[in-house]
Structure formats: structure tokens, C-alpha cells
Amino acid sequence: MSDTPFVAVEGLHFARGDKDIFRGVDLAIPRGGITAIMGPSGSGKTTLLKLVGGQLTPDAGRVLFDGRDVHRQSRKALFAMRRRMGMLFQSGALFSDLDVFENVAFPLRVHTDLPGAMVRDLVLMKLEAVGLRGARDMLPAELSGGMARRVALARAIALDPELILYDEPFVGQDPISMGVLVQLIKRLNQALGLTSVIVSHDIKETLTIADYVYVIADGQVMAHGTPQGLDVDRDPRVSQFVHGEPDGPVPFHYPAVDYFTDILSSGGGR
Amino acid sequence: MMSRVLRLGRFGCELFEALGRAGIFLAQSAVGLPSREGWYLWLRQMHFVGVLSLAIVLVSGLFIGMVLALQGYTILVDFGAEQALGQMVALSLLRELAPVVAALLFAGRAGSALTAEIGLMKATEQLSSMEMIGVDPLRRVVAPRLWAGFVALPLLTVGFSVVGIYGGYLVGVDWLGGFAGSYWGNMQASVEFVADVGNGMVKSLVFALVVTWIAVFQGYDLVPTSEGISRATTRTVVYSSLAVLGLDFVLTAVMFGGLA
Image (cartoon, chains in turn green, red):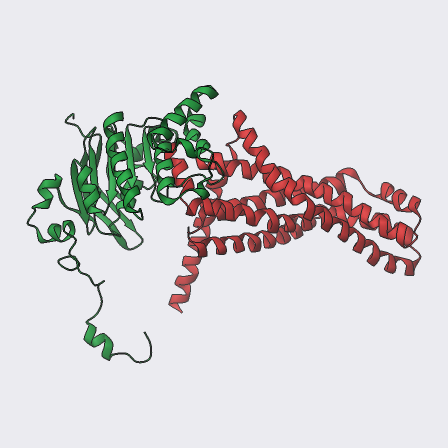
């Protein structure tokens, strides 16, 4: 790993309407490793990936991809930059009018002039890597959730990106496909020399493969370190999250007026 | 009172912001139709937007022509002017009914489908993932649909007129027993190519631009939830219909009302 981070997030501020999502987030994502960004639901993890991919623009601060500011590129340069990134969406986001083969072939067809036979070989290689070579003729609607996510993964690596962003890759997976995905992400990272960023709140799975972890809450980085370091972190907020305790410094209750006064004050309304 | 003024002000700001976004959106997408693949995508959309709308447009055209002839005949015959039936049917269709009704049908049949399709692609993150693959969805998804709409509606309008005039012939001549020679002869003598056919086509081009623009923009700009999609689809049909009828008045005033 070199010293300058591959992706650097500096002083990031972002708000949606009146709600602050990020209030000064700094991250350094080194080349070649698996970095996990964790935090409770609603802490803006997906938003963070969209900011890195240039789909949203921060209110303040900047995001550097390989030393270049993502949000100061022309539309054309930004699209060129995105060819070096792959992103796995939570829903898979496969193109519903194309079959599995064409979905994986899509980036190759639009960005390269490779002859048909070579596209075929490449697509079959990517599908083989995720174990779905046999499903090439199926339509996205016919796939299970886990299969759809693996096809999306094959599509994300079709152009051999340098960076791959995973948005909640383990959500809603049964134990078997969860295990398959965990292994896949780790293996692909090693075999292709990728830099991986995983956004997730599945602590157990993520900690087994991550090299470095950032925990985000309340719009800020609450803690960061290696998985082993976080496991023994004494900060009660970190410990609550890492060990999955239902109540603690991060409250179980959404902020509300006092329960007692609320119940007694009911005057027929809500 | 103050809050009403504020609300009005906010409404005004939001309206202009939306118009601005829609304008930038149109400019960014309308330029994108290069490459061989672009042609293929455009052809595919021509099929969905144009060919598949053919049935409803032609059938409606036939009925409207037939009704026009029936209504026209019963009135004209009172004045002994039933030989002017062909002229009446052709002018009503070419100047007014074909562009307007075809555009309204197009908004309902193709516009709503465009909104729902693009909206669903947005809701299922297909547009986002396309962006992250490095493909501009404005060029890849929106531009072919936009251009297909621009081209398809004027062609559908031509079809509407032709079938409508034939429908008028069926009723006026074959059924009610008018004289075929005067039906066609009067039409030929009174319909001017530029003033009538040409102006009708200009109307149709304007409607095509407006309806398709509204449809794809509503799809692209909607809130990606099921409620958002249903609202945007409704808005497409309502806004398109109002825009078509309003613009029709303006265009008619300029073209035939002696304003120009």
C-alpha cells in the first residue's frame, strides 16, 4: 500500500433539506485493501457512496479519487473516471430488459470495440467468477436476490475497475448466499488487486473480511481502526454498535417528548 | 396574509426552478443521438412509441372522420350544401382534429408509458447504475425516447388524417349516398398544401416536442417511490393535455386567426 490514499474524503458536509447527513467526515481509503464503512441504518452510508461516485455534490469538503477532485470534473471527465470504478447497488440494479449475459456485456459493449467472440469470452469469465455461467440466458426477473447481486457483481467487474463500491452487499441474503458473497468479495479483491469499499451494517460478516473499518454515526466518524482494534474499543458508543446491543448511547427511541406527558396530553388528536 | 404571499412566492420560485431543470434536461438529452448504436436504440423506441400507438390512433381517426361526416352531412343537407362535405371533413381534420386528438391519444398511450418506464428505471436504481458504469442515461435512455416521440407523433398525425378522411368518405358517400366526385373534388379545390396541411404538421411537431418532453422529464425527475411514479404518470397526461389544448389555441390564433 502506498502512502497517499486512493480515495480521500476531506471535511465532507452534506445536508438533505434541513437534515444534516454529514458534518465534517474525513476518510482515507488505501489502495488494494478492503475498507468497511459501518454505521446504523439512516446514517447516510449509501449517500456517502453516491458522493464518492459523483452522483451527489457535497455542500462543503471534497472527495479525491486517485488525487483528483471528483466534483471538479467536467461531465465527460467524470464519466471517464467512473469507468475506473465499479459499484454494486443494494438492489443489484440490473437492466430489466436485458438478460444476464447482456447485462454483464453492457459495459464492454459501450466502452470497448472488442469483437463479439472476445466479449463472449470475457462475459463468461466474469460469470464463471461469480458461479453463474449457467444462468446466462435468464432474465433479471427470474433470478433470486442473491443471484441478482452476483450478476451485478460480475457486471461491476466487467471492465476490471480499480475501485469497487459495495452498497449493503449482505442485506436480505440467506446464510448460504451471504457466505458466498463474503468469500467472493474477498477473493475478487485479492485476485484482481482491487480496492474495495464496503458499506454495511452487518457487523459479523463485514469484520471478517475488512482490513480497516470506519464507524459513522451522527454525521461524523465515530471511530476507526482495524477490526481487532474496534472489537476491544472501550468507547461505549462503539462497543454498543460492534456488539449489537439494542440500547445504549445510541438510543432505541427516536427523539420524542416525555412518554408520560405524551400519553396524558392526548386531546383527541395525535 | 403574509403566509399566503410567502406561499405564492415559494410556488413561483419552485415553478421557475422546475422549468429551468426541465430546460437543461432537454438541452442535455436532445444533443445525444450519435453512433450506430444510438440509431438502433432510436429505432427500438420508434417501435414502442410509434408502431404500437398506430392501432389506437388509426381506429380513433377512422371514427372521428365518420362522426364528422355524419354530423356535417345532417347540417349541410339543410342548406343543400352536402357536396361541401369533403372540404369540411378534410379541413377540420388537417387543421385541427388530427394534430390535437393524435397528440392527446399519444400522451395517454405513449407519454404515460414513457414516464412510468423511466420512473421505474430510476426507482430500481438502473439509471444510477448506468451512470456508475460510465454511461450517461440522458444519452442512452432519454435521448432515443425523446427523438422517437418527436418523429413518431407527426407521422401518426398523418395517418390519423388519412384514415379520418377515408372514414368521412365511407359515411358521406357509401352510406348516406353523397356524390363521390364532389367529395374528392371539393376537397382538392379547397385544401392548400402549405396553409392547411403544412400548418397542421407544424402544430403536430410542436405538440410532439411538448408531450414527449413532459413525459420523459416527469419520468426522470420523479420521486422514486410507487406513489411518486403514479403521480408522475398522472401529471404527464394532465400537463400534456392542457399544454396541447392551450398551445393549440395560440397556434390557431397565429396561423388562421390573422394574428401573424
